[in-house]
Image (cartoon, rainbow, N blue to C red):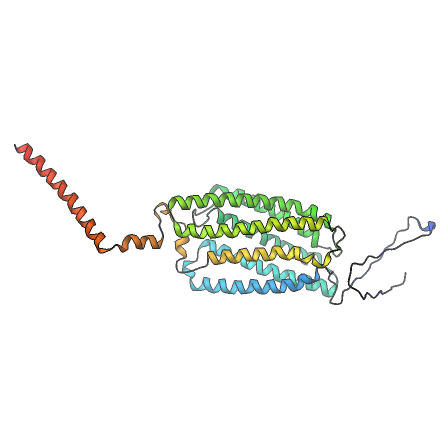
Length: 350
């Protein structure tokens, strides 16, 4: 067949069929390729909006990293181990968004997706998602705040992290690496299920750990840390509700669109998770921002005797009347002790 160019003047979903009606051609094997190009490049219509989206997300992560870095530099001596972990998550998020943009830009310009480059991008993304989830789990367990380490739970947390990383890596490699044609909605739904089950288990573990941490802080009456963890739990609850609602919509969207007929809005499915992760990361950065009082949030060996600064001031401030009465009480007790001793001595002499 000679090369033929077919101009397309109307936006829509197009299919190309090769039909042979001659019985003599039964069993014929054809080889060749088709090249599809949109006005702005080779990116499929469902993926094209994501390239611009990753530009905005890169700028958002860059702004967050600048603000966070400035705070860390200002209060470097008070930075906690937990805050170093947050720095790593911000850095991975920024790196991931930049890599996704360059991968999409290369695809858009050349029409090809080199396996090595896309695999690297997908791997960085899977690492970022895994580390961010383990950070949330560690915070929920009270790492660096209620306990200095995760202790015996470290191996279980790492095992869960490795499992989630493999599931996420498999899903993204299947969907992106070496893939130019659109994957059917039902095939993507099958690949999403293992990832979704592990996410559900993570959420259950996070809230169980968070409940225990809140109980510990309430029992010890550490009101500063308790207030932070309550805000964190509220933000996490909102995130989970939004996630469950979106997963329900995503399952419905992919199950009812096996041929990608709603391709123009398909990019929102991917974009939502990046936006949600970024918002939750901003909340964590706000709650655990480096400051001159960061050490108040850190784990202390004397946590059982800990109390916040306001309580300390209320105990030590003391009004003059209270101090006088306390002094009188001490003198009265001391005097009573002396008089009793003297009475006993007189009895013996008698």
